[in-house]
Length: 119
Image: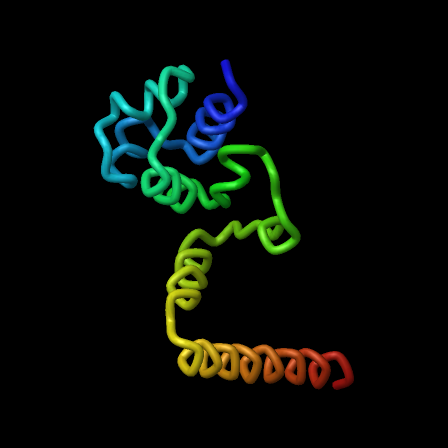
């Protein structure tokens, strides 16, 4: 079995997804997932992108096993991961606003934590 096929199957099973569930999330027939996992075919670039997104990894990792520093971070909270992916698609002004809101919230939490530790 080739590396892509084994990575795909391993990621799918780690996430507790059946071939049918993954296929539905990606928008392909479940037979395609089976073929990919057996190494009988490779997905199109568009399908690869949707597979990677559904599995919470980069396309590079799925195809080649490569990661970059940004992709090494793992998110246990899938909803948060999906929200960050949505933010990435925003225009630069909206991204800046989201970063400002997030920074303000995290600063507030750090201050609350510091105040709680000194009280």
